[in-house]
Length: 358
Image 1 (cartoon, rainbow, N blue to C red):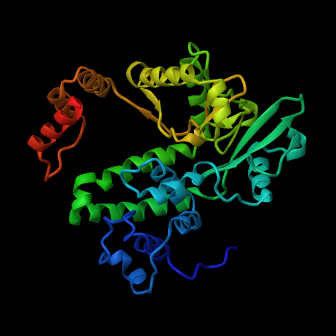
Image 2: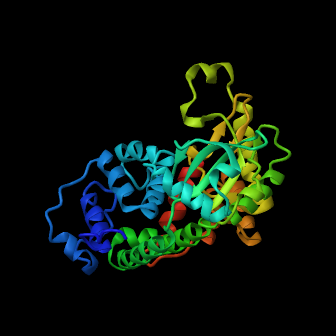
Image 3: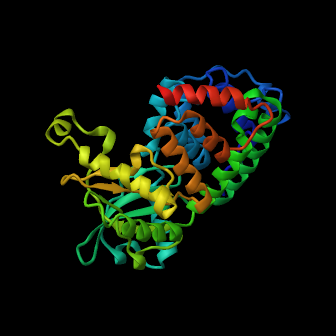
C-alpha cells in the first residue's frame, strides 16, 4: 500500500499555482480562494522555469498534460517557461519497468516473454499518460508498444474536479478569467483527456487517419496490431526517425522539406473542412520525420470533431482573412466564439480589421 501523503492534494496543487503566479503562468489564480488557504499559509518562494517542469511532473499525469499544452502557448506563458516546458512534449520522467511489465501482462493475459522476442526496458519516450517501448514480435517485426501508466484514471478525475472548481472561481472573480473562460477550457480538457485513456479509441483513429492520409505520399499514420492491443496497451508498427524540431541544419539544406510542409498544411485543411476530424495534440513530439522524408503523425489519442456548421464558419473566416475582408473575418470569429460579459464588439472588429489589412 502506498504511504499516505503528508499534504492534501489541494494543498499540493495550491502550492504550485501560488509558486508560479507572479511569473505570469497562473496569474488568474486568486490567492484568497478558500481552496488555496492551506497552501497560502506556507512560505512559498517564487519558482523558476526548470523548477516548474519538475513541479508539474511531481503532480502527475494531469499536470504533465497541462504542461505539454502550455508549451505551445506563448500567449499564456513567458518564453523562458516555454523553453523549459518543451522537454515535456516527449521526455517525462519514466516509471519503473516492472510496472510496465505488470500492465502488459495483465492486459494481454500472457507473459511478456511469450509475446515478444525482445522488449527494451528503456523507453523510447515517456509522456504524461504512457511510455513507449521498442520490441520485436516472434515473427521478427519491429513494433512500438505504448503502455498506459498504471492506476492513473481515478487521480486524473479528482484533479480535474479540483481544477474545475478553481477555474469557475477564476472566471467569476478575475479579469483574465472573464476574458478567457477557464471553466470551458477545463470542461473540454476533461472530455479529451478521459477519452485519451482508452487506447481502443486511438486504434480506431489510427485506422481512420491512415485512410484520410492515403492520398498524401509524404504523410502517414502507423499501423496498429489489434492482437497485441487493449484499452491500456497499444502496439504499432515501429517508425524510426527524428523529431521535427531536432533536424540538423545540414539536413534541412539538403532536403528543404517544403513539399512535406505543404502536404501537412493541406492535410490539416482536409481534416478541418473535409473530414471534420483533427489531430488535436499537434505539438512537435507527435511528428516524426523518417529517413525517406515521410512524416508520421503519432499519438492520435486526442482528436477533435468539427460539426458541419462550425466547418462552414471556419471556412468563411479563412476566406475572409485571405481576401483581406477584416470586418467579415471579425463577424465570423464572433460567430465561432462565446460572448463574455465585457466583450467589446466594436473594438474587436476594429482591431481585427487592422490586423487583417496588414
